[in-house]
Image (cartoon, rainbow, N blue to C red):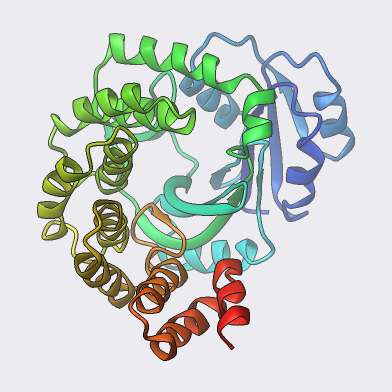
Length: 349
């Protein structure tokens, strides 16, 4: 068995079957229900999960830690109800534990956001012993005793559907999380939590509030923390939405030296240059993003180092009257089944 999968849930009737079906049968499944009014706990129990009930106290870490208390296997894997463990995960987990059984694993969270997708990393797999526990009221982080837990990078992937707009609205998550973020920041200010606050405002198209939160996060100057590079990207897009394109370029450009292998930064700068009307600068940035390529080492928007950058270069060369070069880039993007490039190829060929 060797793995205990731990979930905390509330009113997840529409998701619980999907996530539980994705978990290998040999894993132990712990479901901690925090007060469902629907059939979530009944369904989970019928599917073989060990279901426990817990009085919610507005603290995700307390709930996570309680769920871990019920785990009986040597390693714990954390899942949420709006996630799915793809078939490839079981083998990758086994391979990781053969090499790094004593170390937590940072897995790839693949977020489906309507027609787009993004990746970010989170520590979700770790040894089941008393050293490891969660801290933080919301966006809880794994600690090793009193310090943030160190981890190894892994290729284990978890698919996440909770950012789809309809579900996000239907669950009332925005208002609930804003309240919890504010409570957490009042108790313990941190750059990471200001980043999460800004990200939440950005997702709700409240770009002024997002800008303010990201600005506070930058003040912590935690350049080596994993949240910092993707925070810069969303900060730049917030400035763009507010009309401060020139200022965004001036702020973001120097960070390319800090993160030379992060394609989202030159892709952002290319987008900003396009907005500014500087097509030559735009071309250079998109070429740089394409040269860097895709990465799993950062939280990234898929396509920034591949098909999106290639498509934008196709647009550039088409505008410049070089249709043959444009077709080359459109074909590169179309190899990823990128619809805008497929449409341009139909027009040009």
